[in-house]
Image (cartoon, rainbow, N blue to C red; front, side, top):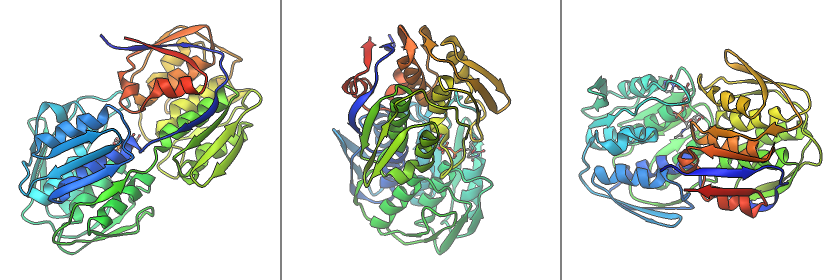
Length: 417
Ligand code: UD1
């Protein structure tokens, strides 16, 4: 049976909460451990379902993986199995990040393609063409992406779009290639910087992380390392929006506020009082939020993963907001659930127009992905009465101790198994 959450609306969130490492970083760092024989240690790992899923993927490739609270130890053998065409990979989209490391270490990678995704189509064309520029051949065969290379060579690569996943796979292939790779229009997300810092601590020579041009000078061999995962800006942003929506007062630690700059600026425009510290921030909201427009874009733009939270706050804001999704085309499926909660929203292509109402109306809703699920819980916090959120296994994949953290902040939320 799938778990569900029951949320009683009306509480004002107050207090302090600390975020752990980013889901979207830890999975790639675990895959990067494939690049060096020996034991790599990752600390500040989030205790979420995706981490044991990634353990299963790495174990299927021949690694030993030990998860001990927030510490993950990966022991990589001298010889890896290049074939990741098994059930664990198929169930889990982020596992495609083993493609780069396997191609560079084994000269061959077979990575099963996951099934459909609720947030829209997610092709791998840029991952494939990047590896091809480095000298690999790639093809889709029997539901898996296959890459083969007789030694990778550095190249100049320009991405059509600053894809996070393609940037990561190109990086993890190029670090062991012969010569220099220059990657233009690279993704600039903090998780990319985190990956590059780990690669450099393994002996790689990567320069320019966090800018649109990354230069990688290939080395012969990498060594294992110990690395602390960067704080999860999406979880931190979720708490920031929850604070503003519930007219609360929440301090969030474990996150560099510059990683959430635009999302926090938007809250200021909505009327919140935002204070930033070296490793955290405080959001206070005394009145009903004002309507604000949002456009999702690659970093440093407004993150698509916080788009459901933007819709949530716009649903109860004073005035009209327009939210534009530029990264994933089907992410507005979540709006149907917001309509069930009484939101005044209409979708037009990749825009959604919301006329804010005073209060949402409790009902039963279904989460379709991690962020949509969290967005629905935020909406339930400002609905009258009890809202049931179904399919919360999605939320468990990305938010460690979600219910406990909300309870700690004063929300009335229970998990029903
Ligand atoms: C990662 C994050 C996800 C986040 C997204 C954008 C993980 C596990 N997931 O996903 O939470 O929402 O970044 O910040 O880190 N695209 C192509 N061809 C490609 C690759 C991508 O067309 O070869 C398109 C995608 O369909 C999408 C856009 O590019 O429309 C952005 O995708 P990308 O940045 O690659 O996202 P992910 O790495 O999949």
